[in-house]
Length: 392
Image (cartoon, rainbow, N blue to C red; front, side):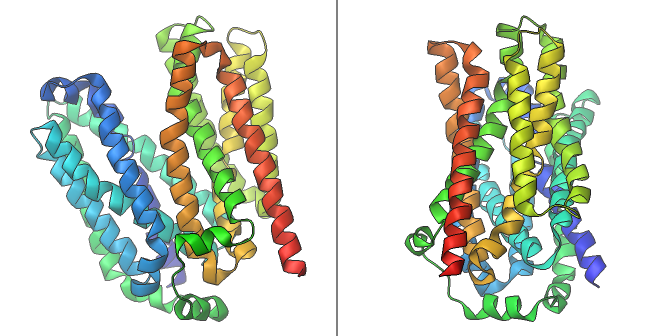
């Protein structure tokens, strides 16, 4: 039963990634059909992000009241309904309205599943699960591409993913009893049930909470900024062709997905803090390569290294949350960490866009370096505070 539940959680992570890249894949066709500017994709993304922030902050309250299994099943159902809504939308306003349940569902399932895995499974599973998310995010555009190239239209592409999400929803509801049987740590189970949901003010007062929130903010800001602006930097600053730049930029995501697959094996030997330090060091090496005056080789190596370096950080921070802050507070902490991540994702890439537009896009590596430096400082401060707090 334990292994069956793990398989279901793996499937849930794949499904979590499937819709994430659909909008970007289909938007070149969608915006023309809806007769809106190409920049309007940002509005839909922002609505989804706000929904994920809200639901992430509520994940502690929802999980303690209904349990991880029910929250996950209902959240995936919300995303399935929202994706079907996208597929039948004929106006931009309708897309914006369907983006609300999509964001609320995505944030809840992300925070709840991450906390459940952090409490009940080894660190390697966290890395492999996030690798599954990468697989889902990679498959999504292929599904959309299939629909578009076969003349079925973008709406059918969304409908295909909605059907997959619906099937998973049924599986999740049928598996609810498995979640209750998972009692690998009775102390953690009892503490989860007995503790009351924490308010945002209470969470922020926890020793090390603000530091880990900033750490997560910085990580997701760095990842999203790299993914969004790497191609533009390669074209405008390094003089590569658009086709070559797109190929090079994709290696960043390949690095993350492959890195998480390898990280799962490395966690057998190294603990979470060591994996995070390793990732930060590799990112530093990648940024240095981007700063070197090579036209293609250094840039190619740099983007791969930044991707590989990013790989262990997200899952290791999540997995170490119960250890640092206690099982009774882990869901609340992971919720605010997720919210911080989404804020970083929304805020920092546009900030660099402003810098690139009004100063120079050549500052791309320096911008990443500044974010990395703040991430390292905040993570070390968190470790120090948690260490002192445990001694007391």
